[in-house]
Image (cartoon, rainbow over all chains, first blue to last red; front, side, top):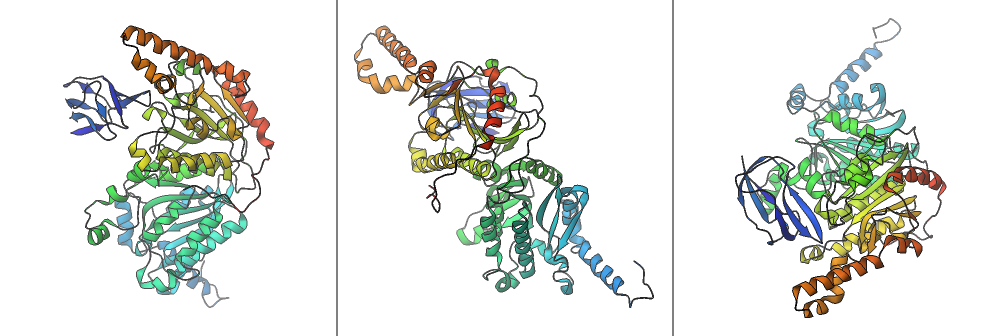
Length: 71
Length: 516
């Protein structure tokens, strides 16, 4: 199980996957808006989305967990 | 050599001694090396040098001790890509590559040789650190280990200094990589730390693994002490040889221009660059369309990815590229990216490598976290390094260049030889959204009807965009040139060739007070 974390502080603009979805390494799964930029957050490894911890509009700090990925 | 009647057998004695020296440490340590996919020091040198040929100094160091062949370090002179280089290489089969007094003396001497000859100095490190039993002979004295670091600092910017890290580089020894221009680390085997995990547990009570605390991947992704992460020792040596192709032998010579090739097949710059300033794209794809195919040498690829730094060739000419990466953290500059940029600019400027800045930057990061971490101090390092670089500098504004981001990326005030805008460029103190909010927030809030409010905001955005229109900046001579994206490579090649004779030293003084 791996936790995908926010690379920088910002607001969640889009959640591009749903719980139960299979994702591949390098796939953008969440978009954060910060410094007026859209920042894609990519899965570091492939897996299944077990839990989504944020919703559109949530403020996240750097290193906050966005998703939990399972095998 | 066979025994001849003319001698008493001195050649046989020499052969015997040489055979023990070439054998290195005890066979069990050679076995251990093999198990961890490490090469014996002399195999490393065979791969590094052209034709595996080299001459060696101090080969007989500690020959009388019996179990300390070459005193655990080989110091050699040979050729790499046809150019002379000096090398020190630890032998970890001999007392774990630890340093005795003769080990240190040999390292100091090969450094002195590199300085006298004005050729690159390579450090092939695989050492447990000081031989505690010999400490008074190798640690505090005038020609003790401290002198190795003193020499490194003295030679910095004079000749290229490269570290290939194959094993541990512990305690004081960890400063050898730190003072080099570049550190290539082998994943799984290379490590750097001031105190080992065992020491950390005893002294401060921390329980941690070697990999977490000082492993190759950690240093190449988190601490930034490592520059290039490789899988094998063969890869490390190949990368070091490739790295050297971009460099002259020393600061007084310019890098060699070779025949250019074409760019990698791919999309046009027009297709790569989104017109929406806030949308991400992959800057590597753009770089591929500017440089000779296969010529990009990424430095600190895995560290602070929001700023790309690397060496490349444009039509055969060596250039150092700094480019914001919109795909990572929006291309926003952080403390680590500022450090990365500053070190890279220093490296290129020292060895007459012209600089190309590709700006697409929303600015430096804001917020409590970065302020407390000293982002102003780090940003100042980046700007100071860029500002004091006297090599040819070309600044290309790809899309946005906001705030101090414009400054860091060699904006017009920092004497780039030319500041080129693509038609997609947008230069401003801040982006339209932030600016309109800053100036009109009271008015915006006072409008009650949401539709009217939106209309007002959009109108202000439009006015702001017109005010910072790139043709207005060109008309006011703020930028020097506007170039169609598909013409950029040609323009860069022409201009770098013209600027080759640039000679504009900084004003005389002892040295600036570098912000650190």
